[in-house]
Every structure is written in C-alpha cells, then in structure tokens.
Length: 371
Image 1 (tube, rainbow, N blue to C red):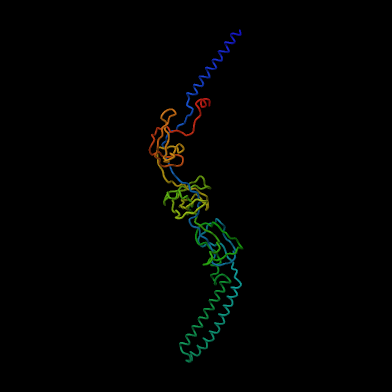
Image 2 (image 1 turned 30 degrees about the vertical axis):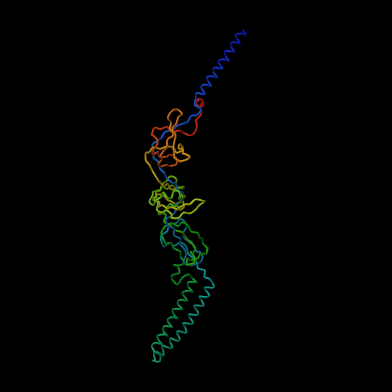
C-alpha cells in the first residue's frame, strides 16, 4: 500500500513539472510587447479658429446737454424705443451766482450807456434839423446810439442765458433733452436730481442717455497674433451667442485692427464683423459670443489622427510606423496637409489600407483572453 502511494505522489509531481515546462515555453513564445493599429479614414477636414467676444450695436449715440444744470424729470426708461425728437429728460437751470451778478452789472452799464447815447442823439438830431450840425456828425451819433441799443440787447440776452438757460422762446429747446436719432435707449446713467455739465470745447459733458439701432449689430472680438495673418476682409463668420444657444448667426469680417494690444503676455488684434439678425430674434447689446472662422477646408480626403504622428528629433519630419507583419512595423515619412487639431490630411506617404502603429502598449495575449 505504501508502495502504491509513493508511486502516485511521484506521478503527480512529474505531471506538475511537465505543466510548468509547457507554460514557460508558451510564455517565451508569446511576444512580450504588442501594439494596436488604426486605419486611415476619408473625411472632411476643416481648420477653423474660434474667437471669443461680444455682440454690440454698430453705432451708439451719447446724448449730452447743451447747458449745465440739474436733472428735473426723466420721461423714459432704459429699453424704450424712441424716434428722433422724442423727449427724454428735462434740465432745471441753476445759475452761477457770480456769473449772474456780473451779467446783471453788464445790463445796468448797457442801460446807462444807452441813456447817454440817446440824449446825445436827440440833441444832435435837433441841431441837425436846424442845420447847425453836419450830416457826418449826425450820422456818427446815430450809429453810436444804435450800437448802444444792440449792446443792451446782447447784455440782456447773456443775462437770460445764465439765469434761464436760453433766450426767450428757445428756453425749452435747451432744457429739454431730446433723442437725436431713432433707436433703443441702452442706458440712462443719470437720475433725477443729478447735476449735469454741458458739452463744450473743454469738457465732453455728462451723458444723459445712450441710444443705438438694435437692428444693426456687430460682433467684436480679439484674435491672437498667430492667427491674424490668416484672416482677410470678407471672410464668413458663424456666431454663437451664450444667451441664445440654439440660434446661430452669420456675419462677414469687416475690420481687422492694424495694431495689436498686449494682454497677459499675448498680443491680441481686434476684429469686427457685421451680424445678420432676423426680425424674429431679439439680440441684446453686450451678449457674449463666439465666432467660428474657417481658415482652410478639404472635402473627402485621406486623414489620420494627429495623436498617431511621430516627429524626427533631428529634422522634425513627421512619420508613422506601418504594420508589415505580426508585431513588425516599418517607418514611413509623411507629407501633411490641413489639420483641425484632431485629424490631419495625409497628402503622401501612406496607402489607404495601411495599418498605423499606436504608441500605447497592449497587455499580453493571456491577459486579454482572461478579460
């Protein structure tokens, strides 16, 4: 009995050794390194640049007062549609006390001068009628009298302007702030009681309201210096608005800034494009937007994923490794065309049925079978 048990144990041990030898030989015969391959595809390649920016009215008009004063009444609100001539606000004139006092003094001086000129004129006219004074002396005195009348009129006019904002019946024209163009009121940055300053040669003046035609909108964005050289006027733009995700708008590039501005270490160039807005869509000023500009486009060309490309360390020439047998590959140098950042056009160097080596290593066959 012990004899049979002994032979049995020896047999089991031999079988185990044989199994280990077979397993070891099988492992050594299996390639330790396998690679996936991918095929080329025919597809459309579009190289485009995405520009961030905003949508704004083509023209914004700032309405400024012709006189200084205090906002007495605002008749419209932001967002209201107006026509040229519509009343927006009314200004109450608050005259400067010193200027008013000086104007009053000028009026008084003009009155005194006029009274004196009138007496001289009356006296010379009596003498002229009697033939005592020459015609030349009479004419000179008459001119002096008329000039004194005009000076008094001017002094009174200046006084009225300082006191009321304008002369006579034109008061409402200066104190009433009206729209100069038709459009939509985008902003009224003042409120009733605010003091405003008139626009003149030394001051831009206080803006009472900003008006724009909302049917004429433009896209305004900035392009990096690496891309601006590829743009030209008239290129089509496809605009996506952040607030109107389902709508897309067409535009044409109409302006490229001749000078760039450095922003956070990168030089940016401003661009503008006319936006085509339908009557059924209301686009608000200041919407954030993205413009897609197609730089190059190829239809139905042979393409390869850019991730599969390798580059020679010395020449920087692109190449790939093409499968020639099981786990065997051959280097092929390529001529590339248009790229969209994911796929790239293969101009020459590969056949359509080529199998391209993927860089990433695969697991052993046994691991793959177990999975």
